[in-house]
Amino acid sequence: MDDEKARELRKLPSVSTLLADNDVAEISSSIRSEVATLVVRDVLDQARAEIRGGGRVSTAELVARAVDDLRALTRASPARVINGSGVIIQTNLGRSPVSIQTGSAMRQVAEGYVALETDLRTGERGGRGSVIEAQVRALTGAERTLVVNNNAAAVFLMLSALCDGMDVIVSRGEAVEIGGGFRIPDVLRESGARLVEVGTTNRTYARDYAAAVTADTAALLKVHTSNFAMIGFTATPAIGELADAAHDRSILLLEDAGSGCLLETSHFGLQHEPTLGDSLDAGVDIVCASGDKLLGGPQAGLILGKKALVDRIARHPLARALRADKTCLAGISATLSHYLRGDATESIPVWWSISRSIDWLEGRAHSWARELGGRASVVKTEAVVGGGSLPGSTLPSRGVTLHTDLDASSLAARLRTGPIPVVPRIVDDRVIVDARTVLSDEDESLLDALQHALN
Ligand SMILES: *Cc1c(COP(=O)(O)O)cnc(C)c1O
Image (cartoon, rainbow, N blue to C red; front, top):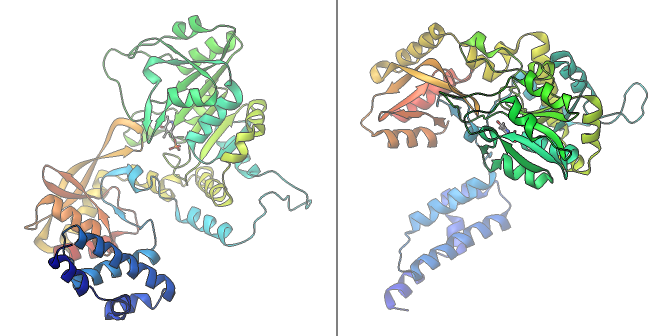
């Protein structure tokens, strides 16, 4: 090793010197000392490796790294952020925020013992999720509902329990990848079912499905194409037609509905999206949906439909591996209560965002701009539902753009890394905070964050 490197290595502070630095000591005071020592030792090891590789590390840099690493150990994670992106169900930001009532229901059961598998009237063992079952029945007509960890789990479990070793017929236009590694052909294969593709990418008719049915066919599977939309010369059969095609041949019609919508989307200027009840009414035997997309609850997968089939799914060994925990069940139940009470659009954040009028958004954006003095102005934007729900459907919106000397990506980075992180959208080199996705009680925090970024 050359002298230069040896000199740099000797200049490094000792573990105890670094621990004694004022900033490091302040943060270490809330962490067990042996943990703080380990963190500081790692920082120094890393610095030694860098110096051997020809780098240099100042003491100030070492202190900064130690402070960062120590802080990271006790910081809440994932960090809460303000969504200014205009994407309502933003997968990278945790999809649906839950309602205040749902959050408190989840917290209550998390912090205490709960009657999860006990019938309080008899003291006997009871079923998990029987209230949810009654709620879903009232909202959709489903005979039985099973809640699992997420919709990927729901679809996988449904296919494993009902179609293992059998053929499942899917339209070529629906053998899709949803994102995050969820590909219909792969899920089918892993479940033990065989994929039989029918039709063409853009047009598939009920007779294509019917012609492919053999003695080995277990089901027709309808898949919501979620994150893409086909326009132009396209055809897909109505659900009712598919139900007839399946039931005439004594096989099942299964559906991966994706979002799990319970409200009529066309009332809010969006394209029509069949609700879970619509699917069951049209004759689908089992439908699967996410809990944290348009349903607006916590991460979950819902499997609903005919009792005998859901019973079979619930008895499959995988059901135990994929089941939802008590906080998820409490969250789904509290979310469903909003639909039953009729206050979903005011209480469930994703529906609150979807249902804001353009006048209201304009007023909100102007009030932000006023608060920020001359340093922001109101702009027209387009918000989207996102999360693979309603692809191609946009909602007119308003936002503010900030006037600074910073280029767009530097300003966006500053917003993301401030004390209250804000995730904006960049359009045409302008940083925009969309008024539709900032939650109802976040105005004050947002303005603090924007002021901080401007100063
Ligand atoms: C989102 C989605 C999934 C996956 O659901 P998760 O809840 O994310 O597991 C599966 N199928 C469709 C059609 C979807 O839109």
